[in-house]
Length: 150
Image (tube, rainbow, N blue to C red; front, side, top):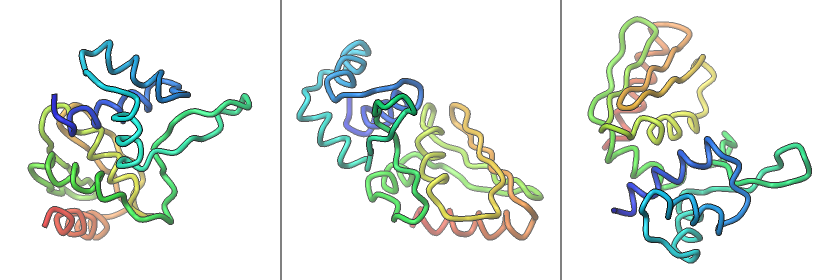
């Protein structure tokens, strides 16, 4: 399987599980037939911009860095460009279509955008729905996301 597929799956794994070590992430990936080493996972973590955050019980787990003041990692931006097929709006809703299984990755990139007019983002398998405050906000967001594709 390709690196992009593996990295998409890593984002999904850390979103749905408390992954505390690289070895634990290797185990999850191996269960899904990814042949990886700890060194490969370490590179993926760096490329994806993952960080360790407190889980509230004095333990740390991997998470996607959602600090809005930081720049979108190039790897995440490249994955967004590769998986998005269209971006359109209807009233105050922006609809992003992606390759099958890639909506969560694209939504992770959208969630890094510092835009107070985004009320919420929901990702399915191949579609993201983004609710904005107004039609004008939806148009501006649609334009901004389409610029990222170029």
